Length: 219
Ligand code: HEC
Ligand code: HEC
Image (cartoon, protein in one colour):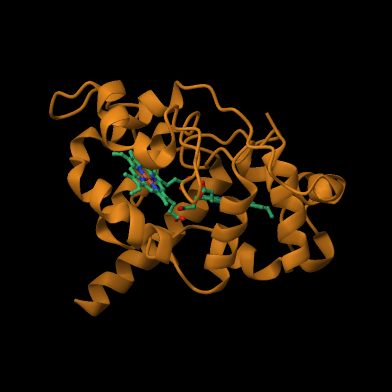
């Protein structure tokens, strides 16, 4: 069983890397929503989200306290995270504490329908980063830090941080949330995520502050 699991992990990593390099959407560990517009079980996504998600994520799912903005996030990314939150491979403390119930109660067959609805909502920027760090952050986002072997974030997250498919939208996401996510990868949580654990470990806390500040102000 152990061998089986690690073989899958290796295959998943290999396909995720290939996926990023090829810029197309095909990888076993990722949810694909393009071919599944409707849920397996009839729900009305707007009412479902209002009833089950808004309490924490905010009335327009624009993010609140420790819960990130979901409005404008991509369906493939949302559905992939719902899988990980459900099987607890996304195992960081905030996810375990706050998302366990909502993920377990949402039927997997409805992840894409919810994701498509969330993706259709306008993504307002949180504007909560440190303004003085925006210039430095933009540099890291657009060019990376070649001497430290840190790739440009825009390579995967898009020139405006708008994301695509399983590459999440980062633009306008809350500074506190983005900073925490990068920090938790350094601590070893959610190791199943592609690319980001390795990238996070190379960034200094100051570089993390800068790039996440920049992102929080992007439309
Ligand atoms: C009890 C509060 C709570 C409820 C209810 C809740 N969430 Fe969350 N959610 C959170 C928190 C807090 C996080 C951030 C977890 C972290 O820091 O990793 C989160 C994270 C997420 C993420 C990951 C976002 C990302 O950018 O990676 C998704 C997707 C998500 N929630 C979807 C939902 C959906 C869909 C519902 C309703 C069915 C829902 N949540 C209900 C608190 C909640
Ligand atoms: C090689 C592609 C790649 C590069 C380069 C990259 N990322 Fe990512 N990033 C991803 C992928 C894929 C995910 C989704 C990870 C997962 O959960 O599987 C992600 C997720 C994230 C998240 C989590 C967002 C959320 O909603 O929870 C943050 C924050 C992030 N990246 C920041 C950065 C920053 C900052 C840089 C540049 C220093 C960067 N990324 C460079 C591929 C990349």
